[in-house]
Length: 261
Image (cartoon, rainbow, N blue to C red; front, side, top):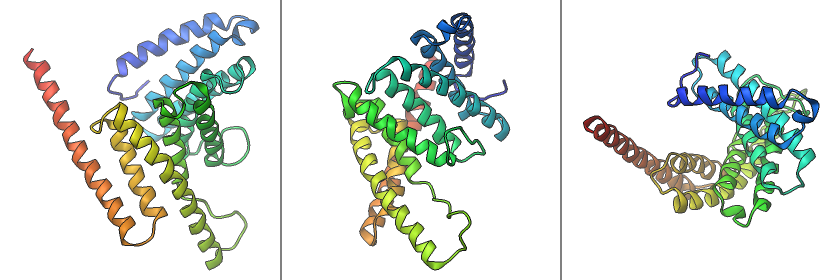
């Protein structure tokens, strides 16, 4: 399929296996409406989402994300019909779908559901945050919740489009800036909770933790005012750069050890 991924062989093999299972389970209408079919469809969507991260070109990324959205959307529809609100399976599917929509929010994909892709992605991401908070005793202390919260925060940090059909004006520009600051403040709260959880469960030198630090720096810079906010944002970026250097050093050491073994 022309994608580049650090585990591309594993992802391709997994996709082939899931696709075969999905075909067997979907041979009847009843099969296509079963929890088993939805579980496999969600896995297929997750594989396409993983491939999209390493696509060789923009059009290939677009195609892979469209496939991910299609399968995850179908899996969600089945699970919504089978499971009650707050069920872990709903939260998991919403989180996967929210992640795919987050990736699609800077593309030309326009999923069904009304509104632009950013608005659709935000609605799904908010649902995922709520569902995963209620899905288990771990609630907001689970890494799944942290992933969903991070997806929502990144969407909240995207630039808002100007209202369609309205002429540009200073008042409109100030309104957009105020709205973006408000959204950035919400993102900052989500990212602070996410970062604390990731540090406890994953450690500081972990890719998700480092990524969250960079997003938090952007949120602090956009939401805050004055030198103190900018100083904190700069400190977060510097810390993330240092941790990334440590991560690369560890990976290089691991590769060297494997080569000597």
